Amino acid sequence: MKGSVIKYERDNIDTDVILPGPYLKIHDYAELATHAMEGLDKDFHKRVKPGDFIVAGKNFGCGSSREHAPIALSYSGIKAVLALSFARIFYRNAVDGAFLLPIEIDESAYRDISDSDSLEVDISKNEITNLTKNKVYKMKPFPDIIGKIVEAGGLFNYKP
Amino acid sequence: MPQTLFEKIWDSHVIVQENGRSLLYVDRHLVHEVTSPQAFDGLRINKRKVRRTDLTFATMDHNVPTSDRSLPIIDQTSAIQIKTLEKNCKEFGITLFDINSPNQGIVHVIGPELGITLPGTTIVCGDSHTSTHGAFGALAFGIGTSDVEHVLATQCIMMEKPKTFEINISGKRKNPHAITAKDIILSIIKKIGTAGGTGTVIEYRGDTISELTMEQRMTICNMSIEAGARAGLVAPDEKTFEYLRGRRYVPKNYEEYVNMWRENLKTDSGAKFDKSFTLHADNIAPQVSWGTNPAMTSDVTENIPFPTEYGKGNAEQEKGAEKALQYMGLKPGTAITDIAIDRVFIGSCTNSRLEDLMEAAKIVKGRKVSPKVRAMVVPGSQLVKKNAEELGLDKIFKDAGFEWRESGCSMCLGMNPDILKAGERCASTSNRNFEGRQGAGGRTHLVSPVMAAAAAIYGHFVDVRELDLN
Picture 1 (tube, rainbow over the protein chains, first blue to last red):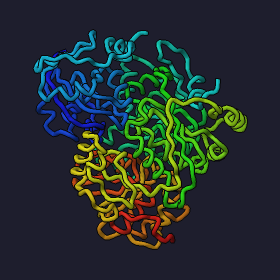
Picture 2: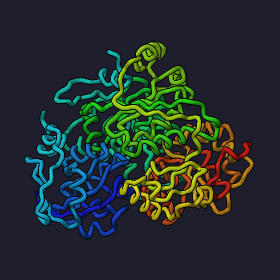
Picture 3: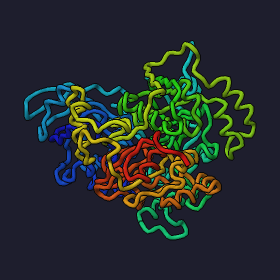
Picture 4: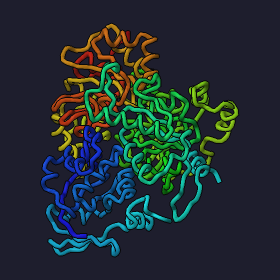
């Protein structure tokens, strides 16, 4: 996976800013995507390109259980969120529907990665390469089963 | 080996276990209009049925209007979502408490009210505040729409076993009318943080918890998710059994169940928790949140903190507080009691039950809402509304200038017309003060029902301990 970074230097980016409540009535995923991150960054929709990564701080996706949050990011083109940590329901939703990869990174990678950097993520090696800065970071390996669910394309396609 | 209450409920629901993951049986599934449509679509596409229609209950709460229910719903997207739930429940054979039902209400208010919520059971719902049901000693998880579909189809959920977290709350509150369950849970989140409970199931224990009523315990368990926990639990006791006795969906041989629950549903002495925290309730003050997450909370007697003071050397914390204060339009050093408010919302799955309204009414009675404030009460369910009206609470609130509305989630999450305008400041009894939660640009301060009521009267925050009760 290759893409460029949209960085939010914030902890506790909650599902209400990722996809504000009023849009929970929208059924069409492409339309949902036009409101992704609207609570925090009105220009996100104009800026995001297919394959981009979001980089953020601790407890990403805290709050509501709305699966609309990872769906909106996914249909915006976001392939992975790289964060210091995730709230559990968001993490689960992201994996369940194979919407995007929730990747845990450490403090040094978080500090080092800048907005607009180009990254290459290799899950098989648990490595993130910063192509802009020519550096390699380790990501926290996925528990075996999480990787398998994502590879299968989500919970419903996964066969134990 | 001695076990915690959580471990007992968990073990009794594991169907299979493999590589640290378990398939867990679900005893009750609660469904609402917002997180279910795609799940039902999924069932249809794959020609699946609902596995246990008898264990699945639905209502509409998130986007129902709280105005006159005899009028058509103006917002067409809401109307469609509500109609869709009706159609889905009919097609799949699920019990629905629809918008005109005397049992309609916030899903976490009606579950206990109807005796759907029972001790020792597993409960899931496509809503993060499902943790509320833990007040009855039920293991209750909030889930997303994929999991909703999975549970509808299989009545099971795949999960990694959470860790255990004991929160001891001990001591006598000096003034139980003014220092509420909301102040206890906000005090806890303030200390352990918004991710303090991540990956754990919290068991709330101690003499203060024993003293609380069922409705107060629900307020505490409700906000477990605000500390990042998977669920919150309180061991059931005589208060729990008494609350549920005679309710519509409790088992026929109820007393046999009570005997079994009394015997089994407690943490054994000597059982070990993965994590522990103690809160002394003796010295808690009424709490007011000032930031954009529930951990950004202070005593009503304090001033808005300086970001450096809040950060305590942690640069991220400091920056977070700075951004929060900017969004909230607050200056460090301002006395919390000097903050003027525009709106008051008494409602939500955290604080919209009968006792919440009774306590708030004690403050409101014989007083008038400040002319600068628009204040509303949104009872959690039609039953709460009816019971409150029988006590004359509606009259007390209306006489003071509050709006008395129909039941639903309302202004807690801004999905229906009850929203804040940009820049408006609200004293709210809900659970989340996230940016834009109650309307784009709206500013939310989380407080207890009595604190919200007092703020409505005075037009700014006041220490309810100093008010006379009527």
